[in-house]
Image (cartoon, rainbow, N blue to C red; front, top):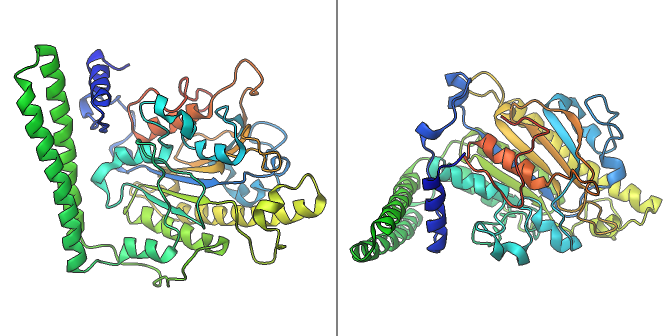
Length: 425
């Protein structure tokens, strides 16, 4: 439970129009029964979002538990069955069809965002704030085509994905020349100047405040200094050598397409493996096609109306997406971690969509898979039906995921508590 002092401080920061992530305090961290090796292995988070959902009849198993018969979609990752859970009946009561897809990782629609302290901030970006400057990139957001509104920051601004695999390769492995690094140092210096101005203004008003407000101001200044330290660490990264690539350079092919997905997954795995980031995401949009499909494209096929021919085409696209997701799980499960386990065991992977049924534009009963993380997976977990009194918001699962990641928070999005049906401790 949070102390009153912590709550007051967070309220003050928000009321001042400033949002700063609180540092992790070792003295307040819960006691763990884990070994030192386990505690020292950093945790990672991966989010994969699809704009058009997955055909429900081909995605969800018929029975709960671990002994379900695999489905048209899940068969591609079935060899990892002990390391993933598929969830039924989860959503955040969003509506709007395509416009509701962007709530997948936040639980909050754009038009609702102003009423929440962290706006419609998404799961990945909240985790990225927690990482801060511990890695070169707090997060890497990738995507195919125009993106699907997957990632949003605490200001309610969409994070546009990097849609060219060559740009991701450069960010990870190509050292910038001195002129570019000079420009980067300048931008960091400009941010530091803004902080200097904030500190000067704060000191000027301190003498006019009562003791309670002075205490609040001191807390504010402490947070500003934390940001200053992060900026100093960021400057260190400018000249820090990048890791050597273990793959051939990726050529710039311009606009990406569905066939680029394997490259993005490979780069995401390398980004985690080299600790260039601990938070990364991949989003796939609406209007794309895949070689060998009809001119109707993915979007047209998603509006199948149960037509057998369209469902056959849709199955090809979904098989492609699941095959390469399976390949990503294979990649990170083959990478040993510092404690002798695998990278997958220290990476929580979220896979799904803010669209429950593309044919009817429903944002209910979303397809959600959570893999890895070293947690006890449950096979197929059927939550209370959304029409029943015991409905559990999807945001509860995201809150539990963030707590697993190390955040000491008790609310995220529209959460009503942690996801008690699954132990992510």
